Image 1 (cartoon, rainbow, N blue to C red):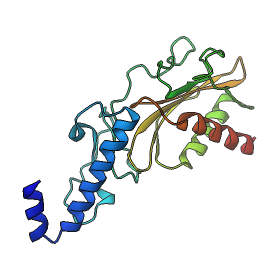
Image 2 (cartoon, rainbow, N blue to C red; image 1 turned 60 degrees about the vertical axis):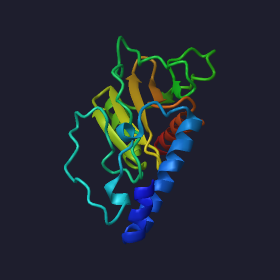
Image 3 (cartoon, one colour; image 1 turned 90 degrees about the vertical axis):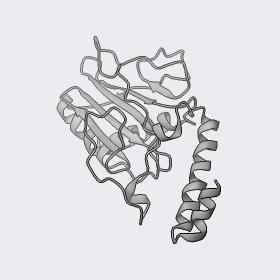
Image 4 (cartoon, rainbow, N blue to C red; image 1 turned 135 degrees about the horizontal axis):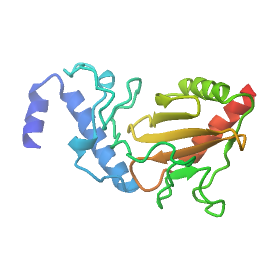
Length: 211
């Protein structure tokens, strides 16, 4: 800390150093509150180069296969992306079950599990049309990246504005039932403060507008 103070006294970047230190303290407090301070800060947090002017950064692209990602169009100052889960996708017509923590919703959770269950999304027309509509809606939303999309399944990552927490959101077209099953889950933390449920309901409303 003494070296930081000396640096501040002699550098034109003093205000930037204080700015970064203040954000790091904020990160620590919020992360502890959410129960997501599960790894050393340097391993989890990445500075978004577009948010900090005057500091040299590496502009090399991040490979798409990297497990710990920072969304390319994200304006989050930090990226607490976590590691992409290895249980994503559809297996025997079913998306992965929600964990016991209250930071996930799924239309395939038992209805009596009111903490995790959410109604599936309705759709009309073909599965291809439904996927195209979902893509259009998601692309219009902030800090999103569609990672996989085919005729029955779509997977997208959503990042929060300040901290860059990433949520994994999946859609599966069940043509027999005439619905779109959805699963939205946070990678890190314990509580999502209702963010995943609100997101699905926002997408439901946008689908209704386009119906």
